[in-house]
Each structure stands twice: as structure tokens, then as C-alpha cells.
Length: 367
Image (cartoon, rainbow, N blue to C red; front, side, top):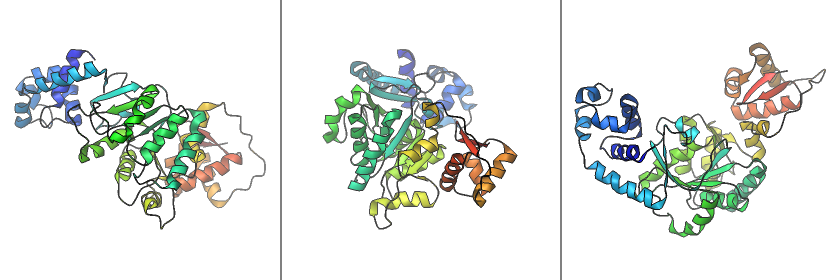
């Protein structure tokens, strides 16, 4: 976008009562942020949800002074800006209704046609969580995924660190402006991360890492990627918020199980128990559920074996696919009355028996 368009968009976002959803609605109806400011009272009030108060707020020209100051920071600091309608805006985030209108970034980030997962968890990471995170990322290295996290203590920074050790692109989504680093002890990671990856935020340089910003930040962590992995979490925490947001976005969620007596496995165990997350025991589970292997190598034709004996649940799934043709995993699970995590294991067994084949987009068909 041009500097003129950016200035008007920044100003619009500083209007009281205008958040990302309202801003998108105004831009959609008027054509641009500039057009919003020049629209007539009649035109604005004709937009659903726009009343006299918001119309009055839109007359506040002081927001342009704030926008000009932020523009100066962006230019002087070499910050990259992505507008939600532009081609350089993260594709998956475009599908999130509450995704930020503007996304600011630094470093060398390349998201074009890339596999991306978010890895999050407790700040009080245990050795179990650390070992699992390390092994998971190491096993994913051949697929060269982008690792996204929140640059916080514990699981977040460990995931970033392991990714950097294996030269994987990694992105830290922060809850403040790009003029600062939080926590300050993580400043030592910044230069290395920006060599292959970097940082993203929706917050201006005037924003501090306030508590409420971390909750808002979590929707970007969940929205950027096709799957979110929860390594460890107590029964309450920011990671569970991220998991819920990812579910709302219809993205895959994975959780690492732990002992029922372990404080920082309770959140993960509950996600699995309530079927809000797939059970994750290693990289193979994630690769299979996301069908990543289909894109990495040409699949060999599957030869259906003769005289195959199917278990009762396998026969039920096979009969359903024979009758209905290729179908999404989630629909198969619903129609056959079984949880997704159980069905995924069943489908793998059936694939090995040569009676079904996986298709892109988590679809399957009978052979």
C-alpha cells in the first residue's frame, strides 16, 4: 500500500470504537480508509452497526497526528507493513474475521507456500516438555516448516531456539510494538531470529506488553498457521486460549499427553479428553493428520490386498466410504460416530491394509 493509504489506515485504527472488524466493514463499504473519512453522514449511517457516536468519532482529526508519528517510526526503523487486502499479507490470517487490519514485521520472513505450525505452552516448562519439543522439531526438519510461537519464557523460546539450531525459519508474535523486546532477557535471540524469520505484531510502537495484549496476540499465533501444538499447560493458561481460538478458526490442534498427576499436563489432557485437540505422540502424528507427506513425495500406488479381514469399526468406515465416495476426516468421524483421534489411527491401519487411500486436504476414499 502507498504511504498515503497507510497514513489513513493508521488514523482509522486510532478512532475510538473502531477495531479490526469494524475497520474492515468500513473499508469494505467505502472502498478505502481515506474514503471512510470523506464519506457523508448519510453514507456512514447506512452501514449496519454505525451510529451517531461512531460518526462523530470519525470527525476527530487528532488521530492523524498519532498516525504521522507512527509512520515516522515505521520508516525510520525499516518495519514491513502488511495490509489485510494485500498479497503480502499472510494467507491463512486473511480467513480470520478478526485478523489485524495491519500487521507489522521485522526480519527476513518468507511465508510463500510454506508449511507452518505454532508451538506454544507453559512458561514453567518441564524437562519432559523440553525434550518433546526438541524431538518434535528435529523430526520435522526434513519438511522445512516455519515454527511460530510467542517469544515468551518456557516452551515458546525453547521452540524458537531449537528451530534456529536446525536453520528453520521461526517467527515470534509479540504483544507490543517492535521498538522493544519483552522479556528483555530474550534480546540475545533477536539478531539470529531475524536472519531467518523475525517478529510480527499488530501493536504500535506506543504499545507496552500489557496483560490484555497477550490474549489478542494469541489469535495471530493461531491464525497464521495450519495447526497449533500445545506442549504443556496447566488447567488454565494462555496456551489454552490459543487452542480455543485455533478451534474457532477450524484449524488443527494437537496436545501432548502427560501423567494425570502432572500439573503442567492437565490442560493438554483436558483438551484431548474433550476432543478439542488431537493426541500428539510425535512428529509422525502431525505429519499424517496434516497430510504433509503427500506434498513431499509422489505416492506409490496402493495395491488392495485380497481376502482382507476388517475389524468391525474398520468395516463401518470402509462401507461408509464405499457408499459416499471420498470424504473429509471430520465428516467420516461424525457419520461413523467416533472421535477424530481414534479415527486417524484406524485410517492409518486401513491404509496399510490397502483398502483406503489418503487424499490432499485430509480426505480419504475407499479403494
